[in-house]
Length: 110
Image 1 (tube, helix red, strand yellow):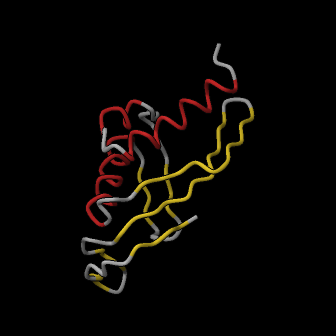
Image 2 (cartoon, rainbow, N blue to C red):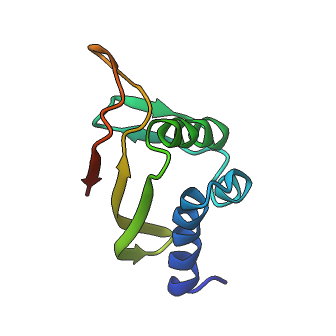
């Protein structure tokens, strides 16, 4: 049986995999039946495979993008990570208003 610390460590492994572009490791940290909703972009995905593709898409927009876990919460089988994302927009970003060209700006999102 996994301890609370084991579950948090496994959740943090996802961030490590994203930061190092280890897509196989990233997918292995996820449930195949993943259900994900990205409120800011109105993006939803319903599988781990699609989620990995979404992550690759973010890396194509901000190739130096990394996440830093700033806090964790755990209850039962649920782990919540508070993450600060940082990166430079070096690639074009598709938005509801069309393509936003690379700005070269560094940004941080919590």
